Length: 412
Image 1 (cartoon, rainbow, N blue to C red):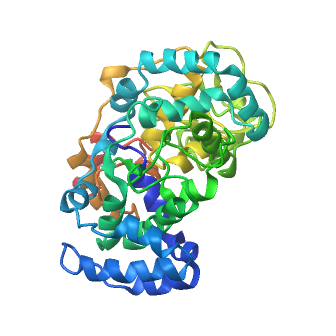
Image 2: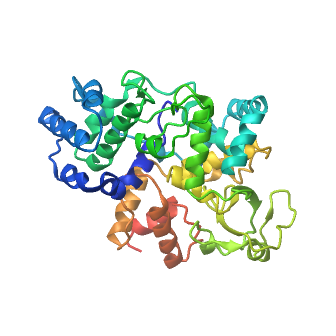
Image 3: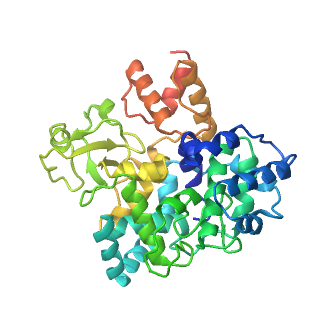
């Protein structure tokens, strides 16, 4: 995807695991110097080359990949200035779940039915889910980025903000080249160094890439079978449950216990049915024990969904709730579902990114821990919002509103 929606949140989730990926040499890398500009970059890179050789990457590959690499301040600046996830679900999904993506996704499945069937048989992931990610990430392989990936990754590996994460990615990129899958010249992508038709981080490319076309190489850039099967392999590893749904639009009653509407709250469908939740067309929900959460991306006045355990895979792929919900919704549309009911639509208030920053600061001041104060209402912010809504006697639907912001600013 041209604006690269995946990397910010997926990379953030890898920070804690970066050192384990590199085993013992990671400790040395983690302790190595970093910088907020290009000063010292060449000296650090020389040390990294030795680390790569010590891990078994050939000296020839290291030289071909890293000799002559220069620091890219524009890449580092872009990494620090991402704002796309400040958009609301309406704003983001209206733009990204476009009719052409729905139609093209369906057409690609129909055209390559045998391939999609083979992948689903092996990995359990349906074609609609694969083409949803494929469409959002790169418009089905049309826009994979054209920046030199190694320069981007190396620059971010030197920058202090996420050095450990990107040093893991740089090491994996070298291993991919050393295995013969790609060359330094073909390793091109968006600004943060993701690769291929599904914008895999190099570490995911290395660990989950599949040679599905049998040509002896894992080529996620030029081989669609490799790209699709690798995405399915990764999704399976994230916990996909074969044959189960992921997202379903529903109707919710006005007296629903709103404090239960949180992704962390999973209740049997039979319980949601007792609360008065129905399918979107008014039909009753199955009275079974399949666990689900009620997801209200725009609060109680907007669309409502049941998010099943497979929805967790979407939030693992990208932990932005806006992205995850849009991707899951796109998959349902490709699978034949109608457009969702917008509820009160334009009447639903939307806080600006600056207002969300202010809200996050007020929440932190009250003892909550919303994570990075960035104007993005992620899971931690929404959980804190719910707690404050309950305390103030407001409908606790976890959706940040001007009413809540005003109450906190007034010291209530």
